[in-house]
Image 1 (cartoon, rainbow, N blue to C red):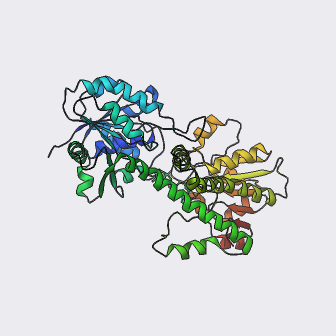
Image 2 (tube, rainbow, N blue to C red):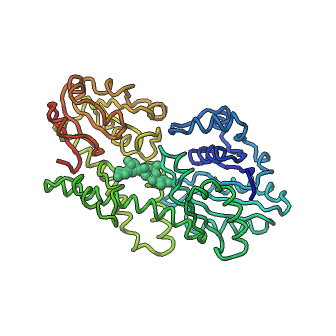
Image 3 (cartoon, helix red, strand yellow):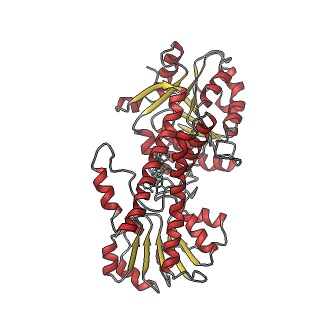
Length: 446
Ligand code: UDX
C-alpha cells in the first residue's frame, strides 16, 4: 500500500484550509493553493485566518513539521498525485443557482500541470458543493488527459467541529463516472490511499455515481433545514396554543425514526451552507423540470426567514412598539456558536434590522465582532456581554455561545435598566430568569 502522498488543495477558504491541515495531520505532504496572497501568507506563517476550534493547532504543527505548505503558484502543484478542489460555489447574484466560475478557473490553472503528468495516475477530487450534473461535465473536460481521474467527494463538516468532522466523518462518499467500471477502481484505490487512517478507523465509504454524490450533499443539508423549519412552524403553534416546543421536540425526538437532533426551535438557520444548498437544490430541481415537487422547499426557506421577522415582532412588542433610541443588547452575531462566520446569520440580520429601525443596539459576540465592525462600521458593538447589557431596556440572546447560556440572571439584572430578555435560541432556563425578576420570553416556549 502506498504511504504518504503528495496532495494539493485548491482553494484555501474555510473548507480548503481545514482540509489541507487535516490531510497533513494524517501524514500526507500537502500544498494549499489560493489566489488570495494575504490569506496564503497568513496560512504559510501558521496563522489561522478564521476562528475554528482546533484548527490553529493542526495548521501550525503541519507548517512547522514541513508537511504543509501554501502557495499562489499553480506550478507548485505539478508533482502532486491528488488535487482536491475546495473552491467556493456562491449563490449567483442573478438567482438561486450556483456560481461555478472559481471551479472553472481552478481547472484552467491546473490543466497544463495535469497534462505534464504524462499518464501517471492522477486524481482530481471535487469537494465543493455543486449542482447535480456538474461533475460529469468536468469529467468530460478532463477525459482527454491521460491518467487523470475525477472523483466527487462531498464534504459534510460542520463549522465549530471542522477538524474533528474531517478526520472522523459519519461517512465518505465517492462519486465516480461508473461505480462498476474499471476506471473507477483506479480512482477509488488512490482516494482510499489518501483516506487510509479514516478507513482503518471504520469510517464507512460509499462508491456511487457522480449524480448521487452531488445529490447526497444538498439532500442532507436540505433535510436538516426541513427539520429546523418544521419545528419552527410547530413553535409558532405552541405560542398560539400554550404548548411548549421543547417538550414537543423532546417527545417526538424519542422516536428513533425522527431522532432528537436539529429540532431546536428559535430564530432559524443560517451560515454558508444550509440556506445556500437549500436554494441551490430548489433552483436545480426547477431547471430539471421538478418544480412542483420542490415547492415545499421554498416554504422551508420562507418559514426560516420568517423567524427573523417573528423575533423582531416580539422585540417591538416588548418595547411597546417604540424602538427609536431604545437601548437593546443583542448577544450573538455569528450564525452559530464557536465560529466567527456571519454569512446569512439570523442574529446579525436581526441586529441590523433593529438598528435600521432606530433602536440603540449594542451587539456583542465573542468571535465575530472584528468582521462585523469592518463590514458594518455604523453598527454599535460591545466588547463583552456585560458592556452590552449595561443600561439595556431589552436583551436578545441570538447566538447560543456557552458564555451567554451561562449568564447569571441575578447579576445581569443589576446591569440592565429594564429586565426583559428574549431567548431566540431556546437555551435559557426561563424559570430561573423569571425568579430573578426578569420578564423572560422564548420562541414557542412557556
Ligand atoms: C451544516 C451541516 O450541518 C454540515 O453537515 C454541512 O457540511 C455544512 O452545513 P454548519 O453550517 O456548520 O453545517 O452548521 P449547523 O451546525 O448545521 O447549523 C446550521 C444552522 O442551523 C445554524 O444557524 C444553527 O443555529 C441552526 N440550527 C441547528 C437550528 O436553528 N436548530 C437546530 O436544531 C440545529
